[in-house]
Image (tube, rainbow over all chains, first blue to last red):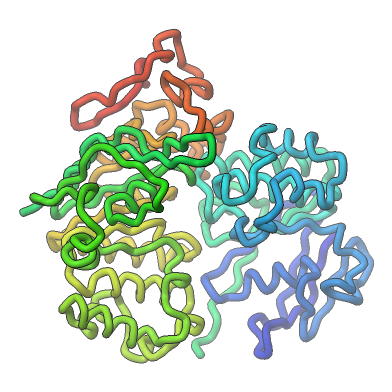
Length: 206
Length: 300
């Protein structure tokens, strides 16, 4: 189980206060809420990329004590971001981006996300957002994460690519019983994708 | 009243050793009072077409065809003609990811007032029309949320009162309420006699405001027609697959991947992914000439 309890987090000022959230193995939890409600902040805390001011994160019963580079459990959680272009080193070919964590499993992972051989030798500026997000998904699955956090993963993608990537994630969950946290402001997408959805409320006006 | 008449426009980029066929033989007419949505997945040539209309293509681009705005052919016009008579005055562009197009060291007001001075518009009223309050204008770009930055970009595009507004993926990254508000603003502009070209991968957005939808695949328009017909009774297998992939419908992807624009097949570019493809599809289909047009040998 991936659990956040009483999370208060932000950047100097708190963005979210006292948020608790649980993702069980095999389950897909949706996280919704308007712009600025702190969805991405919660995602970053649960991905161990951002240290909360207060509250605890537990992974499969183990309490997390260090965040960012100090987090021993980082590799148990895979993350996908909204903008694949900001998430891949522009000097890397897609093959190298996937190989960083995957080593010699690149071909197998590329097959999984339906990236064909020719595309693997291109750099990010030579492929579309959809193709680049496929590479990011392959990279995120490379270390067989127990949990996958998708922060607005589909915002840049057309309907067909969205359906394809969600399909890949579902197949991975069936195989490995991984838990997924799916963040989106698209309620129609979450209604179709998630088993249950948690909604954060709008921030108080500043 | 002027129309925009895009006639058989193609755009090619020469890359070392390869040619990228980004836009192929696109024809489209946009009239005042009309909102046309250009829909397709990322990398299908939508933004390149918009850049061609405004003379924003890089130096290695070659264009053929014409895009007539009244007497002026936008593709043949010099940069000076475009700068003095077209950009901001006749065609306003709302660029993709607006926050990155604002000058980071100047307030929204200073940028908008400069545009108003150069184009001869009124900054206050453009800001009001875009839904901005005076206090928003005193912020720097990094102090604006995504939705506010979008409104500043809209105000900048509208301040010269152009008759055609080209909005490139304006809804990306905004939540549904902001998207709906923004789209309704575009619809109001069309109802006021402007023309709107909405470039998007978001079918729901296109459906909400467009009079007509043009579906683009591998640089070609494969289907164009009244919005509800294209979405609810698509005739091209790609357009049908795209509509059916929506989460509120089948939520199933179209199998396969789009072709590389450097290596397009001679026949129908969608045929390798198409369940209905026959031997006929080895020849390139031509877009029919009716109100709901399709480029397919075996339409649905």
